Length: 141
Image (cartoon, rainbow, N blue to C red):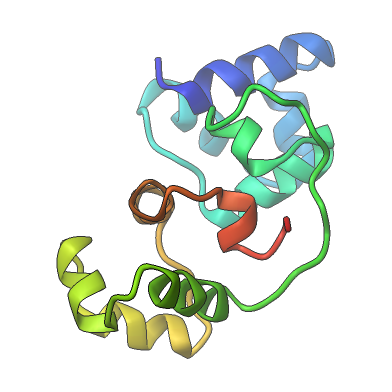
């Protein structure tokens, strides 16, 4: 069981909710929720944000990057702006960073157009920069 599964299970127990009840509250299918447990895949960031908002916890807590159950801060900003900021802090180029992340530069240009990386790629980016999901997505300081 990965950290996301563990945290989601704990939150469901803490709130005395079934998977079906959570699916209904988030307006998604129960098959989707069950897939997080049975098929071991991550939710899209949009669904993860809805889960974090529902349980009033940070994305970092939800994905097991911190044990602090702090609420999600809703100060949003552009993902690419935060990504570029972290690249500059590391004194790197976009090309070098993308290569070190084993991603093509094409991904970066899709992000510039407003697409977000898949959840597993976001987790790789967070580890690479030693930052948080909440920060990189603009939901934290």
